Structures are given as structure tokens and as C-alpha cells.
Image (cartoon, rainbow, N blue to C red):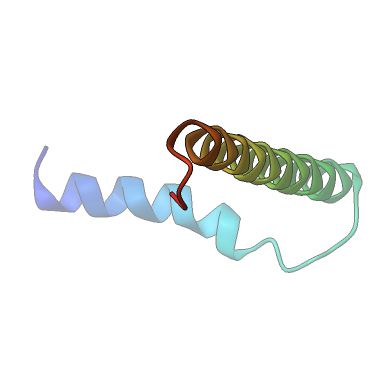
Length: 68
């Protein structure tokens, strides 16, 4: 794809995103809910990873008798 076609494609994709300065409408609400769901999922995954790490560290300390 030549440079002009790439530029035109990027412009077509970027303009609607840049024009979304209005915070009204159902699409904005759906977007906010998706953002919140993604953030909640990320937070839950981080908490689970921390819990797994803590459990692994506790198990290591029980087996070795030392700090891991």
C-alpha cells in the first residue's frame, strides 16, 4: 500500500475518534461501561495474581523454612 493510501486510511479512522468531543448519547454510555468493566477485570486479575504470588511465597517458606 503506498504512502498516500495509508495516510488516507489513517485519516478515515482517526477523524471519527477525534470528533467524539461530545459526551452525549448511548454510544458514550456504552463506552464508559466497557471502560469500567475492563478496569474492574484488570483490577480483579491483579488481585488474583497478587494472591497467587502470596500463596506461592507462603508455600515456599513452609517447604524451605526460609524467606522466599
